[in-house]
Length: 464
Image (cartoon, rainbow, N blue to C red; front, side):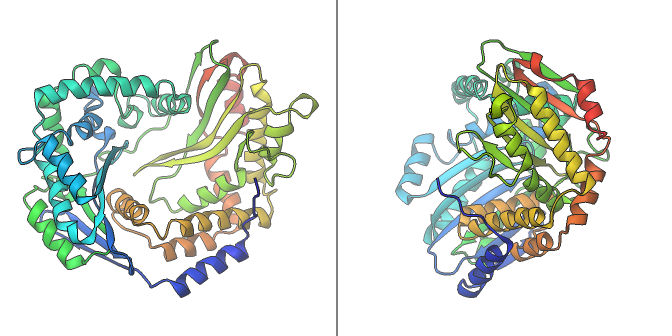
């Protein structure tokens, strides 16, 4: 594999070249009387569009007694409405040539289509039908219950997913963010039509929804369609806040699952991270970029610019790998977040070697023993990833929808570029001392966890 180093200079040049050659997109927003936000961005030269509805309600809005309802509801949306049977719905979408999709996250539920611009009205009609007129028939509920239980079985085999679900459970103990998106199996088996109806009536409110259109769209026409198809949705009686008046509490805790049958051990370390709207959101991303990512299958070792990657590749006895891969990550929510390092290693690996290397890398950030070149490289990688997403209507719609429903505003790519560019080495050092110094640490691991240092040891490591 040939890799080209992305520098600050060539990333800035690519972005400037993009601005010079591409027509400037136009972003507009309007708010209906029921609080629903309508947002659009024109992409000149295209005859297609992505249109979708972003809802500020996901598994976090589930009732603890019926956790999994938000995800269950997403499955049922395509099983027929009061106006369209499942067969007619599928045939209509096929005849249009549209691509329709949906997903549920901890904070959002999203339904979107990619279609020809001439078919936007019909696609918005379909989206409205799915969201407001699903039949939720008992037979469909029972059929999907089996499908979701099978999906749960598949997720249980994805150990990175399992580790992060457990990580949320211990870091946000007995709180809404600690619940899984699918819900526990015992509750999936008991969710009924009343639970689904109650979820819709409680959470599908105008002020918690945004209709997004990106591509060949006319904003005024999109507003008219929003009034026509979503104008009857009610507004919240009380202004909605994601988690009420109280911020989530992050707990320094752990969960370890010993499983001798697994050939690898999977582990995630986490401290409390940044929310979507936190002033240090981009600084956190730059810091994580310095820590980096590494995968044994790629074959990069001693030449990696990341000291942690060098340790992962060559830190074992006789310069052998101490991990199979690692990823510095940041996961943000409306009012909190998780950040840290996820890694996997062979079951007999000495995990202390890699854990110590993580703490040494965090200590390097805190001490300021990073170079300006590392900071600029991380900034360049952030900006490059932004440039690569600028020409896809679905990615742009996702960016707009996520920002609007989670923060109430949208930063343009140019504004993001400026914020990232303004970050200095000292900003990263100050951030590390604020976020990583003597903070609680949460741990989730599955596999041969006997080789993982104790939680007390990990807590002491935060003082380095």
